[in-house]
Each structure stands twice: as C-alpha cells, then as structure tokens.
Length: 267
Length: 304
Image (cartoon, rainbow over all chains, first blue to last red; front, side, top):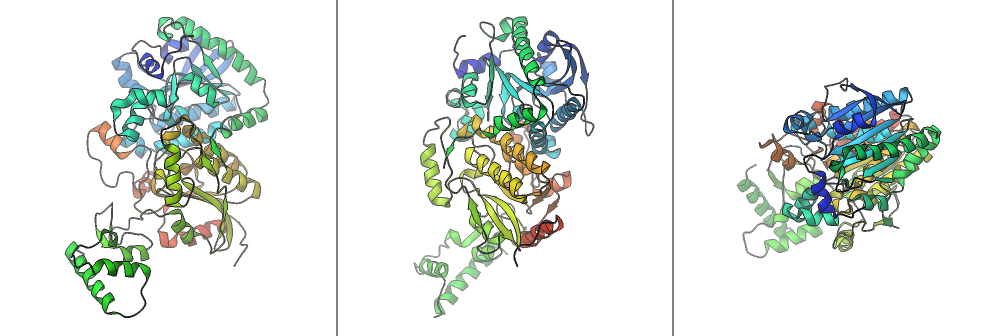
C-alpha cells in the first residue's frame, strides 16, 4: 500500500472520476430496488436507499450519492443531505430491523447541507435522532466510508457495529478548509490543516474510530472500479456473516462500547 | 430609552452615590472611583448592550433582571455558577467528575495552555459542569454548559461527563436536566470530538429505554454538533427566549445562499414555530417550570 499524505488523499478523493455509489451498487449487490421518501416531507436524492441481495442475503442499502456529472450533482445536491434524507435513512433502517435485514451504509458526503430550509426542517434534530436510534437498532449495521466522511453529515450514517474505510478516504469533524478558516481565520491553510487533523484511514484505525481499512487499487479506486468493488464485497462477506451470527444483545452492547470508549482525558 | 438619557441617568447616580455616606457595595465603590477621575467617559462595564436589539441598558438593572434584556427579552449568557444559583436549591449541588481534563488527541498547538488558562478564568476544567442537586426539593441530575469556556464546544471531557451523567441517572433512576450551550464539536480534538456526538446520543438511548425523563433547556447559543446530538434529544425541550439555536452557522448559510438572513432566523421562536421545541420559558419561571415537570413525571420530592 502506498502511503499518501492527507493532502494527496484529499485531492485523490475529489477527482472527477472517483467511483460513486451508483458505480459500486450494481457491482456489489444484486437486484437493488430503490425505496423513496421519508413519509413526512419528501424524497432527498442525496441519500439513496433500498433493498438488495448480497450473496443471496436480503440487505438494506443506504447510500450518499455524489454525482458523476454536473446534472447528477444538481439532483443529488453534491451528496449534501437535507433532513428528509436522514429521515428516509432512519425509516429504511427501522424497516430493516423489522424484517431482520443487515443494514449497509455507504458514506460519501462533504457534510449535511447548510441552508435555510435545512434549518427550518430541523437538520440538527434529524442527525441527532439517527445517532440515537441507530445505536439501538436490533440488526447488524455496517458503514463504509467511500470518499469524504464529512462531519455530522457522515456520522448520521455511521453509528454502526463496524466502520470500514477505503484506503484513501477521509473522515473528519470539519473539512480541512473549514478547520483552517475557523481556527486560523485563513482558509488558504487547508493543506496544513489536513496534515494536522489526523483524518486518514490509518489515523482513524489508531483512534479506534474505524475497524477496517479496505485497500484501493494502485493509484486509487478510480483506476479499477471493479477491483475496488471486489475488495469491498470481500470485506462485506466476512462482516455480514460475523455480525449476523451474533446475538442482538451482544451486538448492541458492543456497538455502545465501540463509541463509549472513545475520548482522551485524564482525571 | 435613548443613549443620552441613559448617560444622564448614570451621571445622576454617580452624584447620588457620592453624596451618600452609607456603606457601599464593592461594585458601587469601583464605579465611584472611576467617576472621580474627572473624565466624562462612562466605563463600558456599566452597560449591557444587547446583541439582539442593540439597546443599551444599565448593567446593574440588567444583572438584577437575571441578565435578561429589558427591551427585547433576549436571555443573555450566564456563567455555569450563575445558572446553578438560579436553578438548584441552595447548597444541594454535588459535582461529578470535577477533576476531568482533556488530553490533546491531534497535538493541536498550545491546546493544553489554552485549557489551563480557561480553567483559571472560568473556574472549570472544561465546558460543562455536571452533578446532582434538588430543584424545589426534587432530586435531579443536572448539566450546565458555559459558553465562556471555548464557546462550550464539545470534546472528550464534555462528551464523557455528559455520558457519565446519563449513565448515573439511569442507574439511580433519576431525571436529567441539561442546560445546553455550544458552538458545536471542538475542532481542536479532531475526529474524537465528532465521536462524542454518537457517544452522548447512545447514552440517552439507554437512559430513555430505562424510562427516565430528560429535559433539555436550550440556552444561548445552542448550535452545531450539540444541536445535532444530545440537545435535540430531550423528551421535553425548553428554550429561553430569543436565544440562538441552529445546526449550521449563520455566516456559513449566508455565504451559501448569498443573501442576508432575517433576524429571527434560528431564534428560539423560529424553532418553536417550526416544531422543534416544546416551549419557551422565561428565566424567572424556569425553576418552577422544571419542578412542575419533575412532579408531573412522578419523581418524589425528597426535601422541603
């Protein structure tokens, strides 16, 4: 595995032909059937959800959708969800729990959308609700960060039993640009921030934030989408099998502990 | 009241104070000393200028009024000590985890120094104080965030103390009242601070399953990762009048949409209208409101 700097990874995951969930889903799952709407307000194209088969096992897939071109990005709002997107995710997750399907979340977002309507419809509440509800869903949850794991917008689909991250993907509390802008009042120090923030897959593994790094093809996922999808599938076969065989009680205790132990303090 | 009238009023008060031979409070003495310096300059700390309506009021009145703007009813920020004194029965508070201090997960430059400095300034080791107390005789776990400490951002310590408070309340079958205020996740602790959102929300899930009552009281300002986690998860959510509550920062939204936002955007009243808080309660009625809610949920009065 090549060891790129955080800045190099940042540009790598932003290149135009980095595969998106629309590339991966047909390669990883069979017969994906999309389900729309949150049943309260509308349907948010930034989060796609549905039922699929994974090696003959029915699963629920919830995925943040980056566009592959400007038209698709307009439709999916550059994968920045509104509250109704998170509420759709929760609805489908509860449905998965009811019918005993494992949930697979594919995370790829710069963050939850910041706008007037998002505030009016309770962006904060929608994210908070997912964090709380996902913690106690009685079905296995696996989240995979594909590219950008942007703050609370990514976390809302990442309360899970196991978090895997693609080798070059990043997961951070705020974008490096936002970090530089707020703490140093200078967004141009983005690269410096990226190096400081400890946001690479290796950092996350060290912190115990993620459990697994999925290797990317040489030069990045875009160089061989099929191989990337195969690597993801290989991980999923193992994880789904392991987590499905666990008792729900054990699953929930472990899920709680996974987050419970994160924090660095003295007393 | 115009600014000129106010200045006159202040001058008169100085003169009155000087002519009085009675004992004076410490603050009045300070004011007098400043008044003696012959200059017509009025010390800034005599006034409260409301960040909402821009009206200026005499600070003594403002403080007597529990830091509520007499013009627009904005409920200004309190220190944790002020909040505690306004909320808990006298001498009933027992603090939890007072010695907990944050480490420096991403080795952010000068972070430890900054925490030390704030520790002295704010008389707290991080941005939240937790403990148990009684409110009009009803026993409850309480958390108070203080925006003077790094805008009460949530890092390891805030996350851990809040989680422990909920875990304790779950074991002891006590209710929890959180006075929230925060700029959001503490960026200086990187991804560790983001995880505190999941950790605290998880603790609330368990607490809620155990059937206990959680009241969130949103105070100025409740934003970002705290809004997107424990602040929004109360069984009952109360907000103080005119406070700022939101997910994204106002400036971020303004930059995105390229237009100025109306004043009431992200106010407590805006959230009430959109269905995200149960009620707005004034500071002088908060204690009785909380006590009544505890009573209604069948918690026992153990004192008074």
